[in-house]
Structures are given as structure tokens and as C-alpha cells.
Image (cartoon, rainbow, N blue to C red; front, side):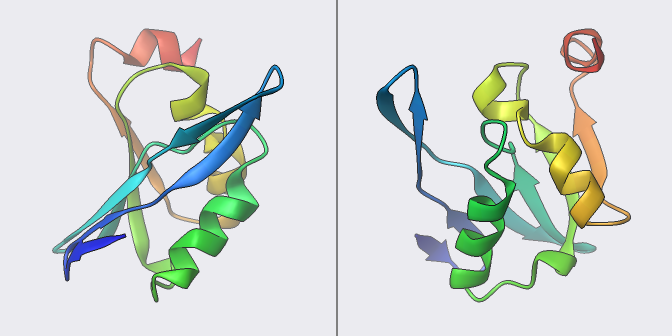
Length: 102
């Protein structure tokens, strides 16, 4: 859902232990391109990139991925996205970094 020209809220369904949950990765535009906030569950990279393209955004224009916290539905597709989007910078708060990096 496009909130305005610079803010998009995506809606993706994810089945976890047989229960469907809706997650809302978001995107905002800044001076270097687009920032994606959170990456979804493991295995969601394809659906996430398709949802981004459906909003008319070229995924190659995503410069940064901000991770809000270490829950699996927020960090699960980081590795896939880094592989598919060369140059993607992954960022998090200093407090979350040790948990995200393992």
C-alpha cells in the first residue's frame, strides 16, 4: 500500500506452524534510493521482491535494509536479499546488532 510517493507499506502473509500471519515490511525513499525496513521470514525473499515490484519499485534501487529487531519475521530473509541485491547495506541499532549477528 503506497502511503505517499516516498512511503510504502507492504503486506505479506506468512504461515508459521500452520497459522497464517500478516507481516508489513515497509519502504521509504531517501537521498540514496529506497530503504527496506525488515526482511520477513526465511524463504520470503521472492515474495517480498515481487511485492516491491508490484508497487512499481525496481528492487535494484534499494540501498539499505534496516532491521528493527531480531525476531525471525524481521530478519529471516536477510541472507537471500544480500545475495540478490549486491551492494545492499544492512543496518540495525547497536543494541540489536549482537543478536542479529549471532
